[in-house]
Image (cartoon, rainbow, N blue to C red; front, top):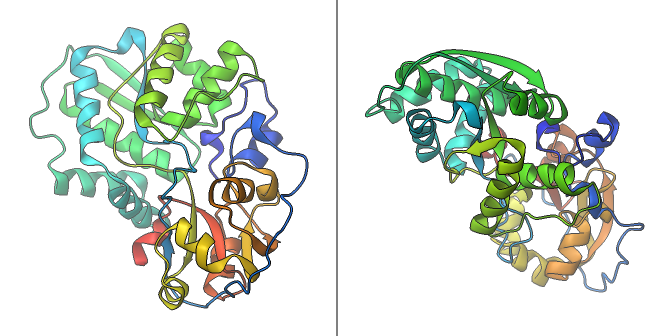
Length: 333
């Protein structure tokens, strides 16, 4: 689903990009599923109509906060200030609501962005810049297109003539951003940092992203300097791997965090669902084992935060599943 959030080298094949989109970065795959030590009873899935994300209380996931990536030649103070207004207006619940408006309620990204901007007073206080033509690139999924429309609104208010162009995945739009063929793209801090690190330092370079946002953005800024990119303020909104259960499952087992899940539900009856590569990925099952000592009794091979995983959760077929933290369906929880 999230083609543009990949942490693979720009030279990597698109097929590999599809596989890696949900669970960690390109250099992090293992060779086998983690050994199961699920000796406890575990917790069978509980059917329900709404999903809740369990808090990542030990920092398994990296900081994929939304932020604008900007070609340095276009990065005037006025332009950055206008984009920062968008970042200041967003947090994860608001991003979930925007995604619900598009993916569940079937509004267009432009309509959803317009309604959000009006309600949030997004353009209030935006100073006029020097003007000129600005092209915003958008990745090929709805969330990124909605973010691009929010940038459009802010920059139009700042006096720029803006166009939004859907381009595709990061392997396509990032080189265009470096060349100045587009000037701005909505990005994700941790994923972009590791992507640029692979370009600059080689595909086998150790990841530079982390659960610490300051460390991640510091590394990103240094890599951006080498690529001719600048960045606006990171928002509080994150779109990253998360683990969800039904509300009924959480209530029955008294769970709010992944730590709770590991403590109370490691065992034979617990079924973890996710994409086929999840057992080997350090941001999926392998990470739950190493960071939380969580042991599922069974893994169900489904999809990357898509309909298969969410339906399996709602029917009680699985106990816990990998989703994305800004999924619009989480707004109905």
